[in-house]
Length: 313
Image (cartoon, rainbow, N blue to C red; front, side, top):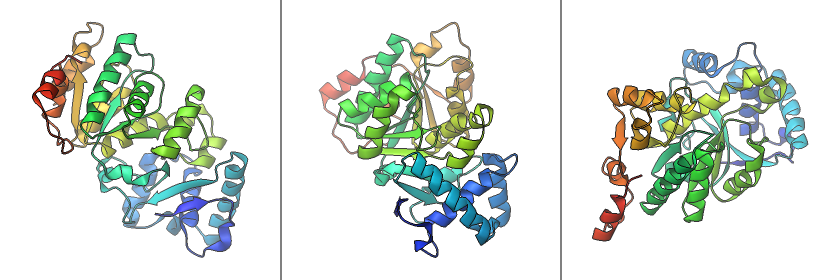
């Protein structure tokens, strides 16, 4: 997969990821554009690439606008993954509205490693944060890549714990690669982009030119992508109105394992855990409840390992 350098001219290659990216950005500038409308367009076209929907003149116009935006935002190097190429993760086709193109920075091969998503509340309790850290440490020890959304709270705790353990992590973000959200995670995002993997399905131009009401669709959409990329999702802590539940629904619909920590069931203020358990989610009291359902990386388990994993999460 080619890593793009936008310090070069767009016209240097007759056919390139640059062209498809510009066309994809143009599709997102159409009135009413959403993942659903764009996915429907591609489904009807049957195997088309983004540039098939626009004239060459329109693509060139968008390419110039995009180049200026990337220059202004100081985004020079990143990759583009396009459906139909050998590098595209087929697991993403399990989503209701599959991605046709997305962007990334970092170590692309991480998408092919066994992975588990760890997600939950932004305003996490201190005990919830500790649970996220304990869970992540176990996953790293068993060779899993930890996937999360780089939001504050559970996401940040999971990414940091994976890094502290010397593990691997993937962040699927709800903004373009040109933005940092939350702002206090800028250093963390830059580190993951350099040493691990950042994935964004958010179009640069649409995000720049639309207001927050249009752009907030990208956060729940990235939860759907996180689920599709992972073998399983573990919810650490969430309210009845949490955006985390978008991922819970997606996981079950995509045929992924959905684990919910026991502490969520013991919280009388929320009702969603029992609802999702009835749909097939697995109640987790300790790490072994997760490990027994997953194909962990080849790693011998010693008696001491087994005893440690029976510790409650």
